Picture 1 (tube, chains in turn purple, cyan):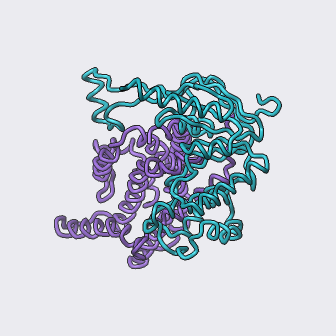
Picture 2 (cartoon, chains in turn purple, green; picture 1 turned 45 degrees about the horizontal axis):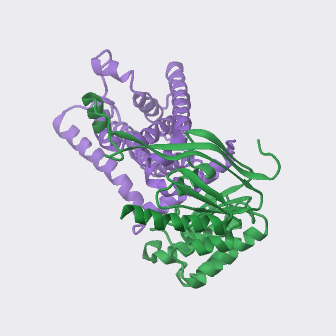
Picture 3 (cartoon, chains in turn green, orange; picture 1 turned 135 degrees about the vertical axis):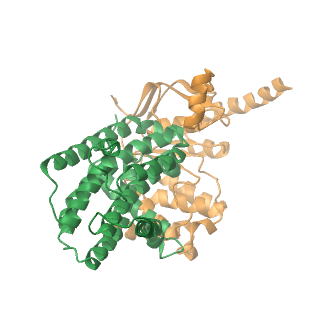
Length: 256
Length: 259
Protein backbone atom coordinates (compact mmCIF):
# COMPACT_ATOMS: atom_id res chain seq x y z
CA UNK A 1 0.00 0.00 0.00
CA UNK A 2 2.81 2.40 0.79
CA UNK A 3 4.74 3.31 -2.30
CA UNK A 4 8.47 3.67 -1.97
CA UNK A 5 9.92 6.89 -3.26
CA UNK A 6 12.98 6.37 -5.45
CA UNK A 7 16.20 7.87 -4.12
CA UNK A 8 16.70 9.93 -7.27
CA UNK A 9 13.39 11.68 -6.64
CA UNK A 10 14.30 12.38 -3.01
CA UNK A 11 17.61 13.87 -4.11
CA UNK A 12 16.08 16.05 -6.83
CA UNK A 13 13.57 17.31 -4.32
CA UNK A 14 16.30 17.96 -1.75
CA UNK A 15 18.18 19.98 -4.30
CA UNK A 16 15.18 22.19 -5.10
CA UNK A 17 14.51 22.77 -1.41
CA UNK A 18 18.15 23.66 -0.84
CA UNK A 19 18.04 26.12 -3.71
CA UNK A 20 14.82 27.73 -2.49
CA UNK A 21 16.18 27.98 1.05
CA UNK A 22 19.34 29.57 -0.22
CA UNK A 23 17.31 32.16 -2.09
CA UNK A 24 15.14 32.79 0.96
CA UNK A 25 18.18 33.19 3.14
CA UNK A 26 19.76 35.76 0.89
CA UNK A 27 16.52 37.63 0.32
CA UNK A 28 17.18 41.33 0.52
CA UNK A 29 20.90 40.97 1.13
CA UNK A 30 23.34 39.54 -1.32
CA UNK A 31 25.83 39.40 1.52
CA UNK A 32 23.83 36.65 3.23
CA UNK A 33 26.83 34.36 3.28
CA UNK A 34 28.79 37.01 5.19
CA UNK A 35 26.19 36.99 7.93
CA UNK A 36 26.64 33.24 8.18
CA UNK A 37 30.42 33.66 8.48
CA UNK A 38 30.32 36.66 10.80
CA UNK A 39 29.74 34.84 14.07
CA UNK A 40 32.50 32.19 13.75
CA UNK A 41 34.99 34.75 12.48
CA UNK A 42 34.33 37.14 15.36
CA UNK A 43 34.70 34.25 17.79
CA UNK A 44 37.99 33.37 16.13
CA UNK A 45 39.37 36.91 16.43
CA UNK A 46 38.29 37.32 20.04
CA UNK A 47 39.81 34.05 21.20
CA UNK A 48 43.00 34.77 19.28
CA UNK A 49 43.26 38.18 20.91
CA UNK A 50 42.62 36.89 24.43
CA UNK A 51 45.01 34.00 24.00
CA UNK A 52 47.78 36.35 22.92
CA UNK A 53 47.14 38.78 25.73
CA UNK A 54 46.45 36.44 28.61
CA UNK A 55 48.91 33.61 27.97
CA UNK A 56 52.53 34.27 27.19
CA UNK A 57 53.42 31.14 25.26
CA UNK A 58 51.65 29.22 22.50
CA UNK A 59 52.45 25.55 22.73
CA UNK A 60 50.52 24.69 19.56
CA UNK A 61 52.25 25.43 16.27
CA UNK A 62 50.15 27.46 13.83
CA UNK A 63 47.68 28.12 16.62
CA UNK A 64 45.41 30.43 14.54
CA UNK A 65 44.85 27.69 11.95
CA UNK A 66 44.35 25.13 14.71
CA UNK A 67 41.72 27.37 16.29
CA UNK A 68 40.00 28.24 13.02
CA UNK A 69 39.52 24.60 11.97
CA UNK A 70 37.98 23.83 15.36
CA UNK A 71 35.63 26.81 15.29
CA UNK A 72 34.44 26.27 11.73
CA UNK A 73 33.72 22.56 12.15
CA UNK A 74 31.92 23.25 15.40
CA UNK A 75 29.94 26.03 13.69
CA UNK A 76 28.95 23.75 10.80
CA UNK A 77 27.76 21.14 13.27
CA UNK A 78 25.73 23.34 15.62
CA UNK A 79 24.21 25.47 12.85
CA UNK A 80 22.96 22.47 10.91
CA UNK A 81 21.52 20.67 13.93
CA UNK A 82 19.95 23.85 15.29
CA UNK A 83 18.20 24.47 11.97
CA UNK A 84 17.06 20.89 11.52
CA UNK A 85 15.16 20.99 14.84
CA UNK A 86 12.58 23.31 13.25
CA UNK A 87 12.74 22.01 9.72
CA UNK A 88 9.60 19.88 9.88
CA UNK A 89 7.34 22.33 11.69
CA UNK A 90 8.41 25.27 9.53
CA UNK A 91 7.37 23.34 6.43
CA UNK A 92 4.00 22.27 7.79
CA UNK A 93 2.25 23.66 4.70
CA UNK A 94 3.95 21.17 2.45
CA UNK A 95 3.64 18.24 4.77
CA UNK A 96 -0.05 18.80 5.47
CA UNK A 97 -0.98 19.22 1.80
CA UNK A 98 0.93 16.64 -0.15
CA UNK A 99 2.60 13.38 0.52
CA UNK A 100 6.23 14.26 0.01
CA UNK A 101 9.30 12.40 1.22
CA UNK A 102 10.00 14.54 4.29
CA UNK A 103 13.59 13.29 4.50
CA UNK A 104 14.40 15.55 1.58
CA UNK A 105 13.78 18.59 3.81
CA UNK A 106 16.47 17.37 6.19
CA UNK A 107 18.88 16.47 3.39
CA UNK A 108 18.31 19.90 1.85
CA UNK A 109 19.19 21.63 5.13
CA UNK A 110 22.45 19.71 5.41
CA UNK A 111 23.22 20.43 1.74
CA UNK A 112 22.69 24.13 2.36
CA UNK A 113 25.20 24.03 5.22
CA UNK A 114 27.70 22.14 3.08
CA UNK A 115 27.45 24.91 0.52
CA UNK A 116 28.15 27.54 3.17
CA UNK A 117 31.01 25.43 4.48
CA UNK A 118 32.75 25.75 1.11
CA UNK A 119 33.22 29.43 1.91
CA UNK A 120 34.59 28.47 5.30
CA UNK A 121 37.11 26.17 3.64
CA UNK A 122 38.23 29.08 1.48
CA UNK A 123 38.93 31.03 4.66
CA UNK A 124 40.93 28.12 6.08
CA UNK A 125 42.94 27.97 2.84
CA UNK A 126 43.70 31.68 3.08
CA UNK A 127 45.07 31.30 6.60
CA UNK A 128 47.09 28.25 5.51
CA UNK A 129 48.66 30.36 2.76
CA UNK A 130 49.34 33.16 5.19
CA UNK A 131 51.13 30.89 7.62
CA UNK A 132 52.97 29.03 4.82
CA UNK A 133 51.46 25.66 5.68
CA UNK A 134 51.45 23.28 2.67
CA UNK A 135 48.03 23.17 1.04
CA UNK A 136 48.02 19.43 0.38
CA UNK A 137 45.82 18.87 3.48
CA UNK A 138 42.77 20.14 1.64
CA UNK A 139 42.81 17.09 -0.62
CA UNK A 140 42.67 14.68 2.30
CA UNK A 141 40.13 16.86 4.12
CA UNK A 142 37.48 15.98 1.51
CA UNK A 143 36.91 12.37 2.66
CA UNK A 144 36.89 13.37 6.33
CA UNK A 145 34.34 16.06 5.58
CA UNK A 146 32.25 13.55 3.64
CA UNK A 147 32.06 11.30 6.71
CA UNK A 148 31.39 14.33 8.88
CA UNK A 149 28.41 15.14 6.62
CA UNK A 150 27.06 11.61 6.92
CA UNK A 151 27.39 11.89 10.69
CA UNK A 152 25.68 15.31 10.76
CA UNK A 153 22.90 14.00 8.54
CA UNK A 154 22.25 11.17 11.01
CA UNK A 155 22.11 13.57 13.97
CA UNK A 156 19.90 15.92 11.91
CA UNK A 157 17.43 13.11 11.31
CA UNK A 158 17.26 12.44 15.06
CA UNK A 159 16.84 16.08 16.03
CA UNK A 160 14.31 16.89 13.32
CA UNK A 161 12.19 14.01 14.61
CA UNK A 162 12.53 15.11 18.25
CA UNK A 163 11.76 18.70 17.25
CA UNK A 164 8.31 17.65 16.07
CA UNK A 165 7.36 16.25 19.47
CA UNK A 166 9.10 18.80 21.68
CA UNK A 167 8.48 22.36 20.64
CA UNK A 168 11.06 23.88 22.97
CA UNK A 169 13.96 21.68 21.97
CA UNK A 170 15.79 24.58 20.30
CA UNK A 171 16.07 26.36 23.67
CA UNK A 172 17.82 23.32 25.06
CA UNK A 173 20.01 23.09 22.00
CA UNK A 174 21.32 26.62 22.57
CA UNK A 175 22.52 25.55 26.02
CA UNK A 176 23.83 22.20 24.79
CA UNK A 177 25.84 23.78 21.97
CA UNK A 178 27.46 26.20 24.41
CA UNK A 179 28.40 23.30 26.63
CA UNK A 180 29.77 21.52 23.56
CA UNK A 181 31.89 24.52 22.66
CA UNK A 182 33.78 24.38 25.95
CA UNK A 183 33.98 20.62 26.33
CA UNK A 184 35.41 20.13 22.83
CA UNK A 185 39.09 21.06 22.39
CA UNK A 186 38.40 23.96 20.05
CA UNK A 187 40.63 26.66 21.53
CA UNK A 188 42.84 24.43 23.72
CA UNK A 189 44.53 21.04 23.65
CA UNK A 190 43.49 18.57 26.34
CA UNK A 191 46.27 17.08 28.45
CA UNK A 192 46.57 13.33 27.93
CA UNK A 193 44.90 11.40 30.76
CA UNK A 194 43.07 14.40 32.23
CA UNK A 195 39.33 14.19 32.96
CA UNK A 196 38.65 16.48 30.02
CA UNK A 197 40.61 14.12 27.77
CA UNK A 198 38.60 11.14 29.00
CA UNK A 199 35.30 12.96 28.51
CA UNK A 200 36.28 13.77 24.96
CA UNK A 201 36.73 10.10 24.16
CA UNK A 202 32.91 10.08 24.08
CA UNK A 203 32.64 13.28 22.05
CA UNK A 204 32.18 12.54 18.33
CA UNK A 205 33.12 16.09 17.39
CA UNK A 206 36.55 15.58 18.99
CA UNK A 207 37.46 12.83 16.53
CA UNK A 208 36.43 14.75 13.45
CA UNK A 209 38.22 17.92 14.53
CA UNK A 210 41.36 16.03 15.54
CA UNK A 211 41.54 14.20 12.21
CA UNK A 212 41.04 17.42 10.23
CA UNK A 213 43.77 19.22 12.17
CA UNK A 214 46.18 16.37 11.59
CA UNK A 215 45.65 16.75 7.88
CA UNK A 216 45.62 20.49 7.50
CA UNK A 217 48.45 21.26 9.87
CA UNK A 218 50.77 18.30 9.73
CA UNK A 219 49.62 16.63 6.49
CA UNK A 220 49.33 13.35 8.38
CA UNK A 221 46.81 10.74 7.41
CA UNK A 222 44.76 9.80 10.49
CA UNK A 223 45.95 6.51 11.99
CA UNK A 224 43.99 3.30 11.57
CA UNK A 225 42.18 3.54 14.93
CA UNK A 226 40.94 7.06 14.27
CA UNK A 227 39.86 6.14 10.74
CA UNK A 228 37.87 3.15 11.93
CA UNK A 229 36.19 5.23 14.64
CA UNK A 230 35.26 7.96 12.17
CA UNK A 231 33.90 5.67 9.47
CA UNK A 232 32.04 3.43 11.93
CA UNK A 233 30.58 6.31 13.90
CA UNK A 234 29.37 8.12 10.77
CA UNK A 235 27.55 5.17 9.31
CA UNK A 236 26.15 3.98 12.65
CA UNK A 237 24.78 7.45 13.40
CA UNK A 238 23.37 7.80 9.92
CA UNK A 239 21.53 4.49 10.02
CA UNK A 240 20.20 4.99 13.55
CA UNK A 241 19.03 8.50 12.68
CA UNK A 242 17.44 7.45 9.42
CA UNK A 243 15.68 4.56 11.15
CA UNK A 244 14.23 6.82 13.85
CA UNK A 245 13.10 9.31 11.21
CA UNK A 246 11.45 6.72 8.97
CA UNK A 247 9.65 5.12 11.93
CA UNK A 248 8.16 8.47 12.93
CA UNK A 249 7.61 10.37 9.73
CA UNK A 250 4.05 9.10 9.31
CA UNK A 251 3.07 10.97 12.45
CA UNK A 252 4.55 14.32 11.47
CA UNK A 253 1.45 15.67 9.72
CA UNK A 254 -0.57 15.26 12.92
CA UNK A 255 1.80 17.03 15.27
CA UNK A 256 2.60 20.18 13.33
CA UNK B 1 -6.74 -5.78 -2.85
CA UNK B 2 -8.66 -3.77 -5.41
CA UNK B 3 -11.36 -5.66 -7.23
CA UNK B 4 -13.11 -4.67 -10.38
CA UNK B 5 -13.78 -1.02 -10.82
CA UNK B 6 -13.28 0.09 -7.24
CA UNK B 7 -10.90 3.04 -7.14
CA UNK B 8 -11.11 4.02 -3.51
CA UNK B 9 -11.90 1.56 -0.75
CA UNK B 10 -12.17 2.87 2.81
CA UNK B 11 -12.70 -0.01 5.18
CA UNK B 12 -13.82 0.72 8.79
CA UNK B 13 -11.33 3.53 9.16
CA UNK B 14 -10.97 5.26 12.51
CA UNK B 15 -8.73 8.16 13.26
CA UNK B 16 -8.13 9.81 16.62
CA UNK B 17 -5.99 12.73 17.61
CA UNK B 18 -4.72 13.28 21.10
CA UNK B 19 -5.27 16.90 21.97
CA UNK B 20 -3.98 18.48 25.14
CA UNK B 21 -5.22 21.91 26.08
CA UNK B 22 -1.68 23.13 25.89
CA UNK B 23 -1.43 22.18 22.26
CA UNK B 24 2.14 21.60 21.25
CA UNK B 25 3.91 20.80 24.49
CA UNK B 26 7.50 21.40 25.33
CA UNK B 27 9.91 19.13 27.16
CA UNK B 28 9.56 21.01 30.42
CA UNK B 29 5.78 20.82 30.60
CA UNK B 30 5.88 17.16 29.62
CA UNK B 31 8.21 16.40 32.52
CA UNK B 32 6.04 18.42 34.93
CA UNK B 33 2.96 16.53 33.79
CA UNK B 34 4.75 13.24 34.23
CA UNK B 35 5.87 14.12 37.76
CA UNK B 36 2.56 15.61 38.89
CA UNK B 37 0.67 12.70 37.35
CA UNK B 38 -1.79 15.02 35.67
CA UNK B 39 -2.86 13.74 32.31
CA UNK B 40 -3.59 16.71 30.12
CA UNK B 41 -4.20 14.63 27.06
CA UNK B 42 -7.62 14.10 25.62
CA UNK B 43 -8.46 11.79 22.77
CA UNK B 44 -10.60 13.25 20.04
CA UNK B 45 -12.08 10.68 17.74
CA UNK B 46 -12.45 12.35 14.38
CA UNK B 47 -13.41 9.37 12.26
CA UNK B 48 -15.15 6.29 13.60
CA UNK B 49 -15.61 3.20 11.50
CA UNK B 50 -15.91 4.93 8.16
CA UNK B 51 -16.79 2.53 5.36
CA UNK B 52 -17.33 3.36 1.74
CA UNK B 53 -16.26 2.51 -1.77
CA UNK B 54 -15.99 4.72 -4.80
CA UNK B 55 -15.95 3.33 -8.30
CA UNK B 56 -13.81 4.42 -11.19
CA UNK B 57 -14.96 7.66 -12.78
CA UNK B 58 -17.42 8.54 -10.04
CA UNK B 59 -17.62 12.07 -8.68
CA UNK B 60 -18.49 12.06 -5.03
CA UNK B 61 -19.30 15.09 -2.94
CA UNK B 62 -18.36 15.20 0.72
CA UNK B 63 -20.56 17.35 2.94
CA UNK B 64 -20.85 17.93 6.65
CA UNK B 65 -20.57 20.65 9.24
CA UNK B 66 -17.28 22.24 10.20
CA UNK B 67 -15.23 19.84 12.30
CA UNK B 68 -17.14 16.78 11.20
CA UNK B 69 -14.01 15.14 9.78
CA UNK B 70 -14.11 16.00 6.09
CA UNK B 71 -10.53 17.18 5.78
CA UNK B 72 -9.25 14.39 8.00
CA UNK B 73 -10.98 11.85 5.79
CA UNK B 74 -9.46 13.50 2.71
CA UNK B 75 -6.00 13.39 4.24
CA UNK B 76 -6.40 9.75 5.24
CA UNK B 77 -7.38 8.88 1.67
CA UNK B 78 -4.48 10.97 0.35
CA UNK B 79 -2.05 9.08 2.60
CA UNK B 80 -0.98 12.13 4.59
CA UNK B 81 -2.46 10.71 7.79
CA UNK B 82 -2.27 7.04 8.71
CA UNK B 83 -5.54 5.63 10.05
CA UNK B 84 -5.53 4.18 13.59
CA UNK B 85 -7.78 1.33 12.54
CA UNK B 86 -8.97 -0.11 9.27
CA UNK B 87 -7.38 0.34 5.91
CA UNK B 88 -7.59 2.59 2.91
CA UNK B 89 -6.67 1.48 -0.54
CA UNK B 90 -6.48 3.82 -3.45
CA UNK B 91 -5.71 2.61 -6.93
CA UNK B 92 -3.52 4.91 -8.97
CA UNK B 93 -2.05 8.39 -8.65
CA UNK B 94 -3.69 10.53 -6.03
CA UNK B 95 -3.67 14.30 -5.92
CA UNK B 96 -4.90 16.21 -2.89
CA UNK B 97 -5.81 19.81 -3.57
CA UNK B 98 -6.12 21.98 -0.52
CA UNK B 99 -7.02 25.53 -1.46
CA UNK B 100 -5.25 27.69 1.00
CA UNK B 101 -1.66 28.37 1.56
CA UNK B 102 -0.34 25.40 -0.25
CA UNK B 103 3.44 25.37 0.23
CA UNK B 104 4.14 28.55 -1.70
CA UNK B 105 6.70 30.74 0.00
CA UNK B 106 5.63 34.36 0.60
CA UNK B 107 9.16 35.72 0.30
CA UNK B 108 9.78 34.24 -3.15
CA UNK B 109 8.46 35.69 -6.41
CA UNK B 110 5.67 34.08 -8.36
CA UNK B 111 8.01 32.56 -10.94
CA UNK B 112 10.35 31.23 -8.25
CA UNK B 113 7.36 29.68 -6.51
CA UNK B 114 6.25 28.02 -9.72
CA UNK B 115 9.68 26.45 -10.15
CA UNK B 116 9.85 25.35 -6.52
CA UNK B 117 6.42 23.71 -6.45
CA UNK B 118 7.06 22.19 -9.86
CA UNK B 119 10.13 20.42 -8.65
CA UNK B 120 8.31 19.32 -5.50
CA UNK B 121 5.74 17.74 -7.81
CA UNK B 122 8.65 15.93 -9.46
CA UNK B 123 9.15 17.81 -12.71
CA UNK B 124 12.44 18.68 -14.33
CA UNK B 125 13.40 22.27 -14.98
CA UNK B 126 12.73 21.93 -18.68
CA UNK B 127 9.24 20.52 -18.14
CA UNK B 128 8.43 23.37 -15.75
CA UNK B 129 9.62 25.95 -18.28
CA UNK B 130 7.37 24.45 -20.92
CA UNK B 131 4.36 24.69 -18.60
CA UNK B 132 5.27 28.09 -17.18
CA UNK B 133 3.33 30.21 -19.68
CA UNK B 134 0.21 28.07 -19.32
CA UNK B 135 0.25 28.45 -15.56
CA UNK B 136 0.66 32.20 -15.75
CA UNK B 137 -2.08 32.65 -18.32
CA UNK B 138 -4.49 30.31 -16.53
CA UNK B 139 -4.05 32.22 -13.29
CA UNK B 140 -4.51 35.53 -15.09
CA UNK B 141 -1.66 37.01 -13.07
CA UNK B 142 0.67 37.77 -15.97
CA UNK B 143 1.52 41.23 -14.63
CA UNK B 144 2.87 39.88 -11.37
CA UNK B 145 5.36 37.22 -12.45
CA UNK B 146 8.25 38.93 -10.66
CA UNK B 147 6.29 40.12 -7.64
CA UNK B 148 6.88 38.51 -4.28
CA UNK B 149 3.95 36.55 -2.98
CA UNK B 150 3.52 38.40 0.31
CA UNK B 151 2.27 41.35 -1.73
CA UNK B 152 -0.48 39.26 -3.35
CA UNK B 153 -4.06 39.38 -2.17
CA UNK B 154 -5.46 36.14 -0.75
CA UNK B 155 -7.65 35.70 -3.82
CA UNK B 156 -4.61 35.98 -6.07
CA UNK B 157 -2.77 33.39 -4.02
CA UNK B 158 -5.70 30.99 -4.32
CA UNK B 159 -5.74 31.49 -8.08
CA UNK B 160 -2.02 30.90 -8.31
CA UNK B 161 -2.21 27.79 -6.13
CA UNK B 162 -5.01 26.33 -8.17
CA UNK B 163 -3.24 27.03 -11.47
CA UNK B 164 -0.01 25.52 -10.20
CA UNK B 165 -1.83 22.43 -9.04
CA UNK B 166 -3.80 21.92 -12.21
CA UNK B 167 -0.67 22.06 -14.33
CA UNK B 168 1.60 20.03 -12.09
CA UNK B 169 -0.53 16.96 -11.73
CA UNK B 170 1.60 13.81 -12.04
CA UNK B 171 -0.17 12.98 -15.27
CA UNK B 172 -2.31 15.18 -17.44
CA UNK B 173 -5.24 13.29 -15.94
CA UNK B 174 -4.85 12.03 -12.35
CA UNK B 175 -6.52 8.74 -11.41
CA UNK B 176 -7.88 10.08 -8.17
CA UNK B 177 -8.44 13.74 -7.40
CA UNK B 178 -9.25 14.95 -3.89
CA UNK B 179 -10.49 18.53 -3.76
CA UNK B 180 -10.80 20.09 -0.34
CA UNK B 181 -12.86 23.28 -0.17
CA UNK B 182 -11.26 24.81 -3.21
CA UNK B 183 -14.39 25.58 -5.22
CA UNK B 184 -15.51 29.13 -4.89
CA UNK B 185 -12.83 29.88 -2.30
CA UNK B 186 -11.11 33.15 -2.98
CA UNK B 187 -11.45 33.31 -6.74
CA UNK B 188 -13.86 35.71 -8.39
CA UNK B 189 -16.71 34.50 -10.62
CA UNK B 190 -14.58 34.33 -13.76
CA UNK B 191 -11.97 32.26 -12.06
CA UNK B 192 -14.48 29.98 -10.35
CA UNK B 193 -15.97 29.22 -13.76
CA UNK B 194 -12.55 28.49 -15.17
CA UNK B 195 -11.75 26.20 -12.25
CA UNK B 196 -15.05 24.40 -12.51
CA UNK B 197 -14.65 23.79 -16.22
CA UNK B 198 -11.18 22.40 -15.57
CA UNK B 199 -12.61 19.99 -13.00
CA UNK B 200 -15.32 19.06 -15.49
CA UNK B 201 -12.57 18.22 -17.97
CA UNK B 202 -11.01 15.85 -15.46
CA UNK B 203 -14.36 14.23 -14.79
CA UNK B 204 -15.00 13.85 -18.52
CA UNK B 205 -11.63 12.18 -19.01
CA UNK B 206 -12.32 9.58 -16.35
CA UNK B 207 -10.75 10.76 -13.11
CA UNK B 208 -12.30 9.61 -9.88
CA UNK B 209 -13.05 12.69 -7.84
CA UNK B 210 -13.88 13.36 -4.19
CA UNK B 211 -14.94 16.95 -3.50
CA UNK B 212 -15.45 18.46 -0.06
CA UNK B 213 -17.36 21.70 -0.14
CA UNK B 214 -19.93 23.82 1.63
CA UNK B 215 -21.23 25.00 -1.71
CA UNK B 216 -24.20 22.63 -1.98
CA UNK B 217 -25.44 23.81 -5.37
CA UNK B 218 -22.02 23.17 -6.83
CA UNK B 219 -21.98 19.69 -5.29
CA UNK B 220 -25.43 19.02 -6.69
CA UNK B 221 -24.30 20.05 -10.15
CA UNK B 222 -21.00 18.15 -10.25
CA UNK B 223 -21.49 14.99 -8.26
CA UNK B 224 -23.14 11.70 -8.99
CA UNK B 225 -23.18 10.70 -5.32
CA UNK B 226 -22.91 12.51 -2.02
CA UNK B 227 -21.32 11.34 1.22
CA UNK B 228 -22.63 13.06 4.34
CA UNK B 229 -20.35 12.80 7.31
CA UNK B 230 -21.36 13.89 10.79
CA UNK B 231 -19.16 13.79 13.90
CA UNK B 232 -16.95 11.20 12.27
CA UNK B 233 -19.73 8.82 11.30
CA UNK B 234 -21.18 8.35 7.86
CA UNK B 235 -24.72 9.59 8.04
CA UNK B 236 -25.79 8.93 4.50
CA UNK B 237 -24.27 7.96 1.17
CA UNK B 238 -26.37 8.15 -1.97
CA UNK B 239 -28.21 10.31 -4.46
CA UNK B 240 -27.20 13.98 -4.23
CA UNK B 241 -30.75 15.36 -4.15
CA UNK B 242 -31.85 13.08 -1.33
CA UNK B 243 -28.73 13.38 0.83
CA UNK B 244 -28.47 17.15 0.47
CA UNK B 245 -32.18 17.44 1.27
CA UNK B 246 -31.75 15.46 4.48
CA UNK B 247 -28.62 17.44 5.35
CA UNK B 248 -30.50 20.71 5.05
CA UNK B 249 -33.41 19.32 7.09
CA UNK B 250 -31.07 18.24 9.87
CA UNK B 251 -29.88 21.83 10.16
CA UNK B 252 -33.47 22.98 10.68
CA UNK B 253 -34.28 20.36 13.30
CA UNK B 254 -30.88 20.84 14.90
CA UNK B 255 -31.62 24.53 15.29
CA UNK B 256 -35.04 23.90 16.80
CA UNK B 257 -33.55 21.44 19.30
CA UNK B 258 -31.17 24.10 20.50
CA UNK B 259 -34.05 26.48 21.01
